[in-house]
Image 1 (cartoon, rainbow, N blue to C red):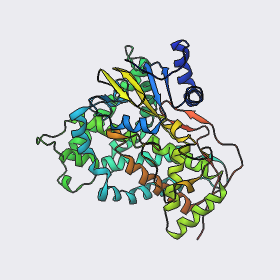
Image 2 (cartoon, helix red, strand yellow; image 1 turned 60 degrees about the vertical axis):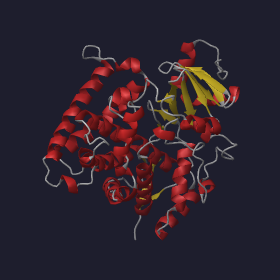
Image 3 (spheres, rainbow, N blue to C red; image 1 turned 135 degrees about the vertical axis):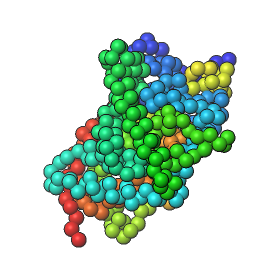
Length: 431
Protein backbone atom coordinates (compact mmCIF):
# COMPACT_ATOMS: atom_id res chain seq x y z
CA UNK A 1 0.00 0.00 0.00
CA UNK A 2 1.32 3.42 -0.96
CA UNK A 3 1.97 5.70 2.02
CA UNK A 4 3.20 9.19 1.13
CA UNK A 5 3.73 12.25 3.35
CA UNK A 6 1.05 14.93 3.41
CA UNK A 7 1.41 17.95 1.20
CA UNK A 8 -0.52 20.78 -0.45
CA UNK A 9 -3.69 19.80 -2.31
CA UNK A 10 -3.91 22.81 -4.63
CA UNK A 11 -3.56 22.66 -8.41
CA UNK A 12 -0.35 21.03 -9.62
CA UNK A 13 0.55 24.05 -11.73
CA UNK A 14 0.28 26.40 -8.74
CA UNK A 15 2.51 24.12 -6.64
CA UNK A 16 5.02 23.76 -9.46
CA UNK A 17 5.27 27.48 -10.18
CA UNK A 18 5.68 28.24 -6.49
CA UNK A 19 8.56 25.76 -6.33
CA UNK A 20 10.26 27.15 -9.44
CA UNK A 21 9.86 30.83 -8.55
CA UNK A 22 10.61 30.64 -4.81
CA UNK A 23 12.14 27.20 -4.17
CA UNK A 24 13.82 27.99 -0.85
CA UNK A 25 10.84 29.83 0.61
CA UNK A 26 8.41 27.13 -0.55
CA UNK A 27 10.48 24.33 0.99
CA UNK A 28 10.67 26.07 4.37
CA UNK A 29 6.96 26.89 4.32
CA UNK A 30 6.11 23.27 3.58
CA UNK A 31 8.27 22.02 6.45
CA UNK A 32 6.63 24.41 8.91
CA UNK A 33 3.23 23.13 7.85
CA UNK A 34 3.84 19.40 7.28
CA UNK A 35 6.99 18.53 9.23
CA UNK A 36 10.15 16.74 8.13
CA UNK A 37 8.56 15.10 5.08
CA UNK A 38 6.02 16.31 2.55
CA UNK A 39 4.81 15.62 -0.98
CA UNK A 40 4.84 18.30 -3.64
CA UNK A 41 3.93 18.42 -7.33
CA UNK A 42 6.62 19.83 -9.63
CA UNK A 43 6.94 20.54 -13.34
CA UNK A 44 9.90 18.41 -14.39
CA UNK A 45 10.08 15.81 -11.57
CA UNK A 46 6.34 15.17 -11.20
CA UNK A 47 5.09 14.16 -7.75
CA UNK A 48 8.06 14.54 -5.43
CA UNK A 49 8.57 13.36 -1.84
CA UNK A 50 10.87 15.73 0.04
CA UNK A 51 12.71 14.51 3.13
CA UNK A 52 14.40 16.45 5.92
CA UNK A 53 14.87 13.64 8.44
CA UNK A 54 18.51 12.41 8.74
CA UNK A 55 17.55 8.78 9.42
CA UNK A 56 15.34 8.60 6.33
CA UNK A 57 17.95 10.38 4.23
CA UNK A 58 20.67 8.00 5.42
CA UNK A 59 18.44 5.10 4.36
CA UNK A 60 17.85 6.75 0.97
CA UNK A 61 21.59 7.16 0.40
CA UNK A 62 22.17 3.51 1.34
CA UNK A 63 19.51 2.23 -1.07
CA UNK A 64 21.07 0.23 -3.96
CA UNK A 65 21.04 1.91 -7.36
CA UNK A 66 18.86 -0.91 -8.73
CA UNK A 67 16.08 0.15 -6.35
CA UNK A 68 16.44 3.97 -6.39
CA UNK A 69 18.76 6.00 -8.55
CA UNK A 70 19.16 9.37 -10.22
CA UNK A 71 15.89 10.74 -11.70
CA UNK A 72 15.14 10.48 -15.41
CA UNK A 73 15.19 14.29 -15.55
CA UNK A 74 18.72 15.14 -14.47
CA UNK A 75 21.89 16.90 -15.58
CA UNK A 76 22.66 13.98 -17.86
CA UNK A 77 20.21 15.53 -20.34
CA UNK A 78 22.70 18.34 -20.96
CA UNK A 79 26.01 16.72 -19.98
CA UNK A 80 25.54 13.71 -22.26
CA UNK A 81 24.56 10.02 -22.01
CA UNK A 82 28.05 9.08 -20.82
CA UNK A 83 28.00 11.49 -17.87
CA UNK A 84 28.10 10.19 -14.31
CA UNK A 85 24.70 11.85 -13.90
CA UNK A 86 23.21 9.73 -16.70
CA UNK A 87 24.80 6.28 -16.36
CA UNK A 88 23.74 3.77 -13.75
CA UNK A 89 24.39 0.35 -12.19
CA UNK A 90 27.55 -1.47 -13.37
CA UNK A 91 28.42 1.22 -15.91
CA UNK A 92 28.33 3.90 -13.20
CA UNK A 93 30.47 1.82 -10.85
CA UNK A 94 33.03 1.11 -13.58
CA UNK A 95 33.41 4.73 -14.70
CA UNK A 96 33.45 6.09 -11.18
CA UNK A 97 36.33 3.70 -10.46
CA UNK A 98 38.28 5.24 -13.37
CA UNK A 99 37.45 8.84 -12.41
CA UNK A 100 38.21 8.60 -8.69
CA UNK A 101 42.07 8.48 -8.65
CA UNK A 102 42.74 12.02 -10.01
CA UNK A 103 40.72 13.57 -7.16
CA UNK A 104 42.15 11.76 -4.15
CA UNK A 105 45.39 11.19 -2.27
CA UNK A 106 48.73 12.21 -3.66
CA UNK A 107 47.36 13.35 -7.00
CA UNK A 108 44.90 15.67 -5.27
CA UNK A 109 47.64 17.40 -3.26
CA UNK A 110 49.61 17.93 -6.47
CA UNK A 111 46.94 20.45 -7.52
CA UNK A 112 47.49 22.74 -4.50
CA UNK A 113 50.22 24.84 -6.12
CA UNK A 114 48.07 25.22 -9.24
CA UNK A 115 45.15 26.45 -7.12
CA UNK A 116 47.26 29.05 -5.35
CA UNK A 117 48.89 30.22 -8.58
CA UNK A 118 45.55 30.77 -10.35
CA UNK A 119 44.17 32.63 -7.32
CA UNK A 120 47.16 34.97 -7.13
CA UNK A 121 46.90 35.64 -10.86
CA UNK A 122 43.24 36.65 -10.63
CA UNK A 123 43.22 38.67 -7.39
CA UNK A 124 46.31 40.68 -8.36
CA UNK A 125 43.94 42.85 -10.43
CA UNK A 126 41.41 43.43 -7.64
CA UNK A 127 40.57 47.12 -7.13
CA UNK A 128 41.45 48.52 -3.73
CA UNK A 129 39.14 50.62 -1.59
CA UNK A 130 35.98 50.37 -3.71
CA UNK A 131 33.11 47.85 -3.77
CA UNK A 132 33.11 45.05 -6.36
CA UNK A 133 31.50 41.60 -6.63
CA UNK A 134 33.94 38.75 -6.07
CA UNK A 135 31.86 36.11 -7.83
CA UNK A 136 33.11 36.92 -11.36
CA UNK A 137 36.64 36.49 -9.98
CA UNK A 138 35.89 33.24 -8.17
CA UNK A 139 34.24 31.96 -11.35
CA UNK A 140 37.39 32.67 -13.34
CA UNK A 141 39.62 31.16 -10.65
CA UNK A 142 37.69 27.89 -10.40
CA UNK A 143 37.27 27.62 -14.17
CA UNK A 144 40.99 28.08 -14.82
CA UNK A 145 41.85 25.59 -12.07
CA UNK A 146 39.54 22.85 -13.33
CA UNK A 147 40.56 23.45 -16.96
CA UNK A 148 44.24 23.05 -16.08
CA UNK A 149 43.56 20.06 -13.86
CA UNK A 150 41.51 18.37 -16.59
CA UNK A 151 43.50 19.30 -19.70
CA UNK A 152 46.92 20.37 -18.49
CA UNK A 153 48.88 22.95 -20.52
CA UNK A 154 47.47 26.04 -22.18
CA UNK A 155 46.79 26.46 -25.88
CA UNK A 156 44.18 27.62 -28.35
CA UNK A 157 41.74 24.95 -27.16
CA UNK A 158 42.21 26.02 -23.55
CA UNK A 159 41.35 29.62 -24.47
CA UNK A 160 38.30 28.52 -26.46
CA UNK A 161 36.96 26.48 -23.55
CA UNK A 162 37.65 29.28 -21.08
CA UNK A 163 35.56 31.61 -23.26
CA UNK A 164 32.64 29.34 -24.06
CA UNK A 165 32.14 27.23 -20.91
CA UNK A 166 30.62 29.93 -18.64
CA UNK A 167 27.76 30.63 -21.04
CA UNK A 168 27.38 26.91 -21.76
CA UNK A 169 27.11 26.13 -18.04
CA UNK A 170 24.57 28.93 -17.44
CA UNK A 171 22.45 27.77 -20.35
CA UNK A 172 22.73 24.12 -19.30
CA UNK A 173 21.55 24.98 -15.77
CA UNK A 174 18.37 26.51 -17.14
CA UNK A 175 17.47 23.75 -19.59
CA UNK A 176 18.26 21.05 -17.00
CA UNK A 177 15.77 22.58 -14.55
CA UNK A 178 13.15 23.14 -17.27
CA UNK A 179 13.51 20.25 -19.79
CA UNK A 180 10.77 21.69 -22.02
CA UNK A 181 13.31 24.36 -23.01
CA UNK A 182 15.77 21.66 -24.09
CA UNK A 183 13.97 21.15 -27.40
CA UNK A 184 15.77 22.29 -30.54
CA UNK A 185 13.12 24.17 -32.51
CA UNK A 186 14.65 23.99 -35.98
CA UNK A 187 17.75 25.87 -34.95
CA UNK A 188 16.03 28.28 -32.58
CA UNK A 189 15.50 28.46 -28.84
CA UNK A 190 17.64 27.67 -25.81
CA UNK A 191 17.97 24.02 -26.80
CA UNK A 192 19.40 24.97 -30.19
CA UNK A 193 21.85 27.38 -28.58
CA UNK A 194 23.00 24.69 -26.17
CA UNK A 195 23.39 22.17 -29.01
CA UNK A 196 25.68 24.61 -30.84
CA UNK A 197 27.80 24.98 -27.69
CA UNK A 198 27.92 21.21 -27.32
CA UNK A 199 29.07 20.61 -30.91
CA UNK A 200 31.81 23.19 -30.45
CA UNK A 201 32.85 21.61 -27.14
CA UNK A 202 32.99 18.11 -28.68
CA UNK A 203 35.17 19.37 -31.53
CA UNK A 204 37.61 21.00 -29.10
CA UNK A 205 37.85 17.88 -26.93
CA UNK A 206 38.37 15.74 -30.02
CA UNK A 207 41.37 17.87 -30.97
CA UNK A 208 42.72 17.70 -27.43
CA UNK A 209 42.43 13.90 -27.45
CA UNK A 210 44.33 13.74 -30.75
CA UNK A 211 47.07 15.97 -29.33
CA UNK A 212 47.30 13.92 -26.13
CA UNK A 213 47.52 10.61 -27.99
CA UNK A 214 50.32 12.04 -30.11
CA UNK A 215 52.23 13.26 -27.04
CA UNK A 216 55.29 11.04 -26.42
CA UNK A 217 55.20 12.11 -22.76
CA UNK A 218 51.56 11.16 -22.22
CA UNK A 219 52.47 8.66 -19.50
CA UNK A 220 54.25 11.42 -17.55
CA UNK A 221 51.32 13.83 -17.55
CA UNK A 222 49.08 14.18 -14.49
CA UNK A 223 46.05 15.92 -16.03
CA UNK A 224 42.72 14.08 -15.96
CA UNK A 225 42.47 13.72 -19.75
CA UNK A 226 45.84 11.94 -19.89
CA UNK A 227 44.83 9.61 -17.07
CA UNK A 228 41.49 8.73 -18.68
CA UNK A 229 43.15 7.99 -22.03
CA UNK A 230 45.47 5.54 -20.28
CA UNK A 231 42.88 4.02 -17.94
CA UNK A 232 41.22 0.69 -18.62
CA UNK A 233 38.06 -1.02 -17.44
CA UNK A 234 38.36 -4.37 -15.69
CA UNK A 235 37.96 -6.15 -19.04
CA UNK A 236 40.92 -4.21 -20.49
CA UNK A 237 38.89 -1.94 -22.77
CA UNK A 238 39.41 1.83 -22.95
CA UNK A 239 36.88 4.61 -22.54
CA UNK A 240 35.38 5.78 -25.83
CA UNK A 241 35.86 9.36 -27.01
CA UNK A 242 32.22 10.19 -26.35
CA UNK A 243 32.45 8.78 -22.81
CA UNK A 244 35.55 10.88 -22.16
CA UNK A 245 33.92 14.01 -23.59
CA UNK A 246 30.80 13.56 -21.43
CA UNK A 247 32.77 12.84 -18.26
CA UNK A 248 35.14 15.77 -18.78
CA UNK A 249 32.17 18.10 -19.29
CA UNK A 250 30.68 16.71 -16.07
CA UNK A 251 33.92 17.44 -14.18
CA UNK A 252 34.22 20.92 -15.72
CA UNK A 253 30.63 21.80 -14.85
CA UNK A 254 30.52 20.30 -11.36
CA UNK A 255 34.02 21.60 -10.52
CA UNK A 256 33.39 25.17 -11.49
CA UNK A 257 30.18 27.02 -10.61
CA UNK A 258 29.33 25.43 -7.26
CA UNK A 259 32.81 25.99 -5.83
CA UNK A 260 32.95 29.56 -7.13
CA UNK A 261 29.55 30.33 -5.64
CA UNK A 262 30.48 28.92 -2.23
CA UNK A 263 33.61 31.12 -2.22
CA UNK A 264 31.49 34.18 -3.01
CA UNK A 265 29.20 33.26 -0.10
CA UNK A 266 32.26 32.89 2.15
CA UNK A 267 33.32 36.47 1.40
CA UNK A 268 29.75 37.68 1.91
CA UNK A 269 29.50 35.96 5.30
CA UNK A 270 32.96 36.93 6.59
CA UNK A 271 32.49 40.64 5.90
CA UNK A 272 29.52 40.53 8.28
CA UNK A 273 31.49 38.80 11.06
CA UNK A 274 34.56 40.95 11.76
CA UNK A 275 35.69 39.10 14.89
CA UNK A 276 35.78 35.81 12.99
CA UNK A 277 37.57 37.53 10.13
CA UNK A 278 40.33 38.70 12.48
CA UNK A 279 40.75 35.20 13.87
CA UNK A 280 41.00 33.75 10.37
CA UNK A 281 43.67 36.25 9.32
CA UNK A 282 45.68 35.50 12.47
CA UNK A 283 45.39 31.77 11.72
CA UNK A 284 46.61 32.27 8.13
CA UNK A 285 49.59 34.27 9.39
CA UNK A 286 50.39 31.49 11.87
CA UNK A 287 50.17 28.81 9.18
CA UNK A 288 47.06 27.12 10.60
CA UNK A 289 43.92 25.88 8.89
CA UNK A 290 41.49 24.38 11.45
CA UNK A 291 39.27 27.46 11.82
CA UNK A 292 39.29 28.10 8.06
CA UNK A 293 38.18 24.52 7.39
CA UNK A 294 35.39 24.86 9.97
CA UNK A 295 34.36 28.19 8.42
CA UNK A 296 33.99 26.66 4.97
CA UNK A 297 31.89 23.83 6.42
CA UNK A 298 29.67 26.42 8.11
CA UNK A 299 29.39 28.49 4.93
CA UNK A 300 28.12 25.40 3.11
CA UNK A 301 25.68 24.75 5.93
CA UNK A 302 24.10 28.21 6.05
CA UNK A 303 24.34 28.90 2.31
CA UNK A 304 24.16 25.56 0.47
CA UNK A 305 24.61 26.29 -3.20
CA UNK A 306 22.52 23.27 -4.23
CA UNK A 307 19.36 22.81 -2.17
CA UNK A 308 18.41 19.21 -2.86
CA UNK A 309 19.67 15.90 -4.19
CA UNK A 310 17.29 13.33 -5.64
CA UNK A 311 16.66 9.64 -6.32
CA UNK A 312 13.85 8.04 -8.33
CA UNK A 313 12.27 4.75 -7.28
CA UNK A 314 13.09 2.01 -9.83
CA UNK A 315 11.60 -0.96 -7.97
CA UNK A 316 7.89 -1.65 -7.64
CA UNK A 317 8.00 0.31 -4.37
CA UNK A 318 10.46 1.46 -1.73
CA UNK A 319 9.91 1.23 2.01
CA UNK A 320 11.66 4.27 3.41
CA UNK A 321 11.20 4.92 7.11
CA UNK A 322 7.55 5.86 7.60
CA UNK A 323 6.75 5.85 3.88
CA UNK A 324 5.99 3.36 1.12
CA UNK A 325 6.89 5.09 -2.13
CA UNK A 326 5.72 3.72 -5.53
CA UNK A 327 7.80 3.20 -8.67
CA UNK A 328 8.66 6.36 -10.58
CA UNK A 329 8.34 8.72 -7.62
CA UNK A 330 11.22 11.11 -7.08
CA UNK A 331 12.52 11.37 -3.51
CA UNK A 332 14.69 14.33 -2.57
CA UNK A 333 16.97 14.95 0.37
CA UNK A 334 16.25 18.58 1.25
CA UNK A 335 19.73 19.95 1.91
CA UNK A 336 18.74 23.44 3.02
CA UNK A 337 16.02 22.10 5.36
CA UNK A 338 18.46 19.74 7.04
CA UNK A 339 21.04 22.50 7.46
CA UNK A 340 18.43 24.79 9.06
CA UNK A 341 17.13 22.20 11.54
CA UNK A 342 17.64 23.39 15.16
CA UNK A 343 17.63 19.79 16.41
CA UNK A 344 20.67 19.08 14.23
CA UNK A 345 22.37 22.47 14.46
CA UNK A 346 21.45 24.57 17.52
CA UNK A 347 20.70 28.21 16.62
CA UNK A 348 20.80 27.33 12.92
CA UNK A 349 20.39 30.91 11.71
CA UNK A 350 23.59 31.97 13.50
CA UNK A 351 26.77 31.80 11.43
CA UNK A 352 29.06 30.00 13.87
CA UNK A 353 32.05 28.04 12.50
CA UNK A 354 33.07 27.15 16.06
CA UNK A 355 30.33 24.53 16.03
CA UNK A 356 32.57 22.48 13.71
CA UNK A 357 35.87 22.96 15.51
CA UNK A 358 37.03 19.54 16.64
CA UNK A 359 33.75 17.99 15.46
CA UNK A 360 32.81 16.17 12.29
CA UNK A 361 29.56 16.92 10.53
CA UNK A 362 27.02 14.08 10.41
CA UNK A 363 27.11 12.57 6.89
CA UNK A 364 23.30 12.46 6.80
CA UNK A 365 22.75 15.96 8.24
CA UNK A 366 25.42 18.05 6.46
CA UNK A 367 25.19 17.05 2.80
CA UNK A 368 26.30 19.85 0.43
CA UNK A 369 27.95 17.18 -1.77
CA UNK A 370 25.03 14.74 -1.65
CA UNK A 371 25.60 11.22 -0.38
CA UNK A 372 25.84 7.53 -1.11
CA UNK A 373 27.16 6.23 -4.44
CA UNK A 374 26.03 9.48 -6.09
CA UNK A 375 28.05 11.71 -3.76
CA UNK A 376 30.01 14.33 -5.71
CA UNK A 377 33.18 12.67 -6.98
CA UNK A 378 35.07 15.97 -6.76
CA UNK A 379 34.14 16.77 -3.14
CA UNK A 380 37.72 16.43 -1.87
CA UNK A 381 39.03 18.50 -4.80
CA UNK A 382 36.45 21.26 -4.16
CA UNK A 383 37.18 21.27 -0.42
CA UNK A 384 40.91 21.68 -1.00
CA UNK A 385 40.29 24.33 -3.65
CA UNK A 386 38.06 26.45 -1.40
CA UNK A 387 40.60 26.18 1.41
CA UNK A 388 43.51 27.27 -0.79
CA UNK A 389 41.63 30.12 -2.48
CA UNK A 390 40.33 31.55 0.81
CA UNK A 391 43.75 31.19 2.43
CA UNK A 392 45.38 33.08 -0.44
CA UNK A 393 42.79 35.87 -0.36
CA UNK A 394 43.20 36.38 3.41
CA UNK A 395 46.99 36.24 3.11
CA UNK A 396 47.21 38.88 0.38
CA UNK A 397 44.25 41.17 1.12
CA UNK A 398 42.36 42.70 4.03
CA UNK A 399 38.61 42.30 3.65
CA UNK A 400 36.79 45.40 4.86
CA UNK A 401 33.87 44.48 7.18
CA UNK A 402 30.39 45.80 6.49
CA UNK A 403 27.15 46.41 8.38
CA UNK A 404 25.01 46.09 5.25
CA UNK A 405 22.18 43.53 5.31
CA UNK A 406 22.92 40.00 4.13
CA UNK A 407 22.75 39.52 0.39
CA UNK A 408 19.59 37.84 -0.83
CA UNK A 409 19.54 34.40 -2.41
CA UNK A 410 19.63 34.56 -6.21
CA UNK A 411 18.35 31.50 -8.08
CA UNK A 412 20.64 30.67 -11.02
CA UNK A 413 18.69 27.59 -12.11
CA UNK A 414 20.38 24.81 -10.18
CA UNK A 415 22.47 26.91 -7.79
CA UNK A 416 21.75 29.68 -5.29
CA UNK A 417 24.19 32.60 -5.39
CA UNK A 418 24.61 35.87 -3.46
CA UNK A 419 22.21 38.40 -4.94
CA UNK A 420 24.94 41.01 -5.44
CA UNK A 421 27.69 38.54 -6.31
CA UNK A 422 29.41 38.70 -2.92
CA UNK A 423 30.32 42.38 -2.70
CA UNK A 424 33.74 43.15 -1.21
CA UNK A 425 36.00 46.07 -0.41
CA UNK A 426 39.66 45.06 -0.13
CA UNK A 427 43.07 46.52 0.66
CA UNK A 428 46.32 44.82 -0.22
CA UNK A 429 48.26 43.65 2.83
CA UNK A 430 51.82 44.95 3.11
CA UNK A 431 54.63 43.04 4.78
